[in-house]
Amino acid sequence: MRFITTFAFLLLAFQSYSAAGQEEEVKAARQVIAHYKELRKVCAIARGDDRKECFRELTEATDDYQRAKVIVRSVEHNNLEDLHVVTNVQ
Image (cartoon, rainbow, N blue to C red; front, side, top):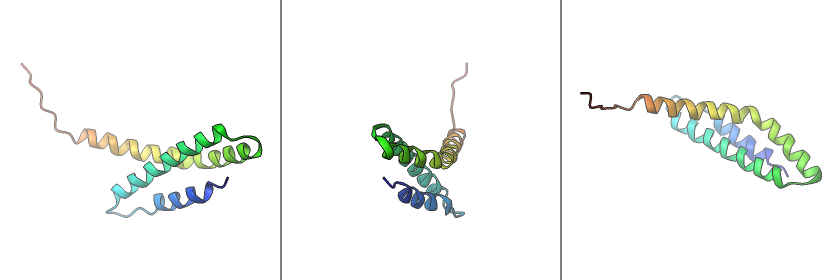
């Protein structure tokens, strides 16, 4: 059960942010989130030593998962602020 290799690859993509790549950063952050959620599902059904190893990997991935959620949340919040809302005030 070595998911850490895949996660390390996603983390590398996550950290390689360029000035023109906010979309890429968000895409990588969403991949980190999706991978973390999938790993969480796998850990829930794993047994014995595989379960212990899986949860160890999950614990190691938690900080990156939290950072990814902040990135996605901030972009979604900014997108809402950029909306032009027209109201009919009487």
